[in-house]
Image (tube, rainbow over all chains, first blue to last red; front, top):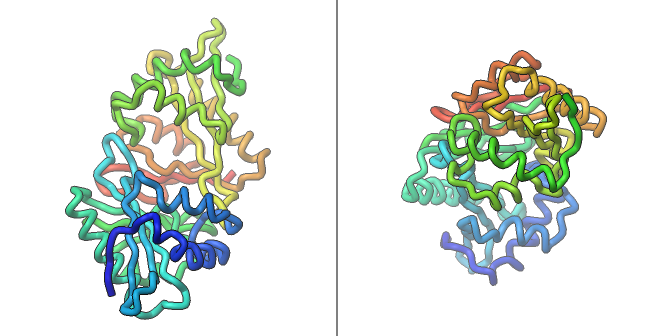
Length: 150
Length: 150
């Protein structure tokens, strides 16, 4: 397994699982009908650091981004988003990628990370909790806001 | 007092108090050094509905925006932001504007409103609470996330 920063060339290998995850509507509060171009602008945004995981065969099996969540007096809080190919789940890629991004965030000087909108049915809630995230609050019938110091 | 939708012509009358509020860093998690052009793009965004309050002398004394906070499975939750001229505080403009936006959000079909990042020192926290918002959670040393059903 290799975790590295993404390049523009990785997008066509991210999009198939990105689309499958968002279309399912169980994990991200984004429009399930998001087009490939809208998704590319959202995910491969130059204001974000984007990462991919390659498995041992060289396939891109997961991606994540890291970005400031706020500005001004709260600029020390990061935000991140994660997508693991549902066909490649259960192999530890999500956990390894999350640990990598927490280390990258720490190195960049952030002191905490917030997930703004974790759909309650997202199976990764268990992973986030095991990594030390807590649920700060829950928007009724919708979303958890999760936090971890880093 | 008149509450109406903003036009592009209103921006020069919003910017002085917008700048004063953001530069103080006590209420919004935005860069205190935000330029006028960045602020205009952020606030007068065509994806948002923007409102202003005129007092009886015709002066613009407050502004607010209303926008969806999420997409997909959580598209029913709105977000809003409020700025009241600090030199015109305590006259009920903030409360009137908030009540107006809650009604507008309800009419637009939203079922709840979330404030993503209310700096803990923001004096409006008391106003939001009196209007039925609750603190869903608090990002340590930084921000409240507040919610109200509508």
